[in-house]
Image (cartoon, rainbow, N blue to C red; front, side):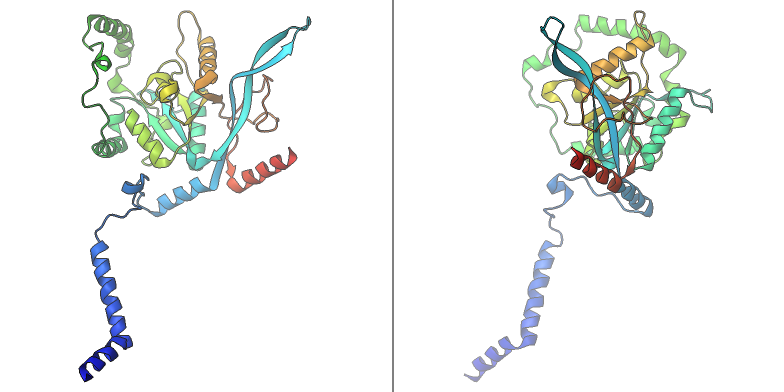
Length: 363
């Protein structure tokens, strides 16, 4: 009877209760110390957190502090009007509007911004504009992506590191059908017509590569990647960076509008060229920072106009790198006015947000 009474007293003592609680907590902690965190990046699909440093913290702060306003042009803006006889007709014009978003959600993509061994210390006019927008984007926290091809990418250590990261990441995912249906394997890659066509294409390019071997190519001295810039060339590497940086809008510069900017794995066609596989990322081509290849039937000015209109119709918007947005209310659609849209100056988010509220109240 006394022993039972003493056990009840011990059980009720504060020291005994505290000891029991500590034992339970330690037991639970030891079981969960090495368990998988259900909120970890691997479980949630979130990008892995970058290691912090004063420089990285400053970069993050810059990204979070600014927003960017981009006046854009697009096709078609259609309206119906009556002619002198009262008949209705559809008029197609160039539309203009304004896109505003945090700078941290924007990436500048530089495609084939080639230099050469004897490149002048003074940049050409288009190279100077590319350099200016690159520096402005870096200053305000825009993600920088250099997108050359092989063998140029192999010269940059950050490309090799990124390639390994993406290759390792992809090992956990099945990217191809194990047993694809036969119609997806037709025609075979060794068919004679295809091989002949490829030989014709290669023959036309051989002269250019003889004059400027790919092994001697490099990114222009005026646009050299920094250690914290991305350098890549494959589609999966590109998509990984967009996911990691949470990018929603791409600013394209470089060249050529009618070749690599369109057709590369990092080009516009693979992202926006097919309705069923279109990636939901907004694309803006900077007109004054992009080049074009002329043809026997079209000089550079004509070829550039045709390609920019081609992009504007469905695949992308266009804009410019300098100047001011036409003095129309943001969001208003209007026809051609002779004013070219341009990349608006980057400004603190609070100022832009305040301006947006004023515009909203004035409508």
